[in-house]
Length: 190
Image 1 (cartoon, one colour):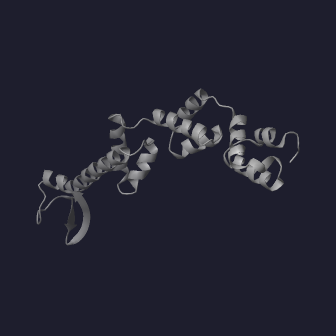
Image 2 (cartoon, rainbow, N blue to C red):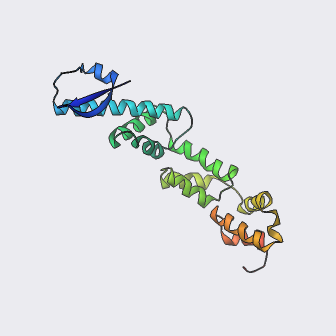
Image 3 (cartoon, one colour):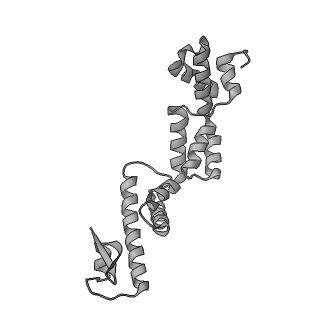
């Protein structure tokens, strides 16, 4: 539950009732600006931690991704502090998240390594972690391309229109034109 704080009759902020109780805040009590800032920050931090725990109960997050999610409702400081606390408690681990997510992107969603790297960067994973993880993942892009063509573009070998669509799709998935050409175009120039 939340309580509203008013300063000189004007709405100032909403704070968690637990924090209001901790600081013995009540209607008509006068407090300094310093104490007021401390109370608002502590309430934001508590609520950000609660939201982080709730979000993490549904799926894994990268630290940067969780911070961005928390910053929607809470201050930057509270969001960063809450994410640090989740990391300290062992609920956040960018390396484990990146390993799991990279494998999902490459082997389940059939993205190329370069596209998987891009998706990991978007989640806030550091380039060092990405390099380490990607060096451990072994896959054959030619096999991935063949699988995708068989699944989505069976007529690509015979029909030029479908072939162009397949090429565009595979390039958006991050595959190199030379690999696509090896599979789809054989020796034809395009």
